[in-house]
Length: 124
Image (cartoon, rainbow, N blue to C red; front, side, top):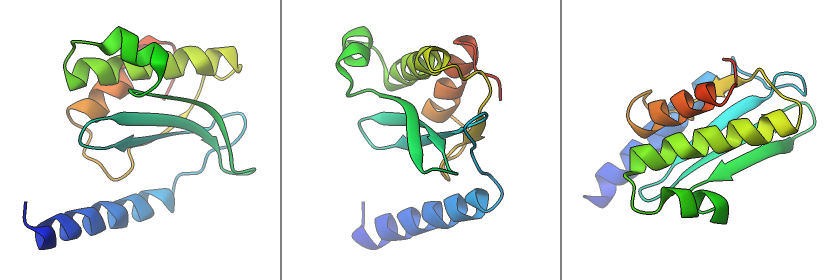
């Protein structure tokens, strides 16, 4: 991909994310489920914006998730990440979250992660 196009796409995503973050805020009771999608991996964090702390997280590079996702497609791995982050949230006593797609389209891996989190018991 052309470097200029890649820079524009990244800047556009960051602008979208900034717009969304102006309206969304996570609390200790209802943290923000933030997603970041790179080319190879996907990451999810539950963030309390009032204190700036991450309450739970999961990604495809975690040993637990990587073992489950071995040999699966990226979308299937994203669904596993959603289920694992939901399980870790339940352990931390969290059932409701605010979904922050990070400026990415709600499509493909982002939607799969959200679906996995819902199946794991998170409400949003």
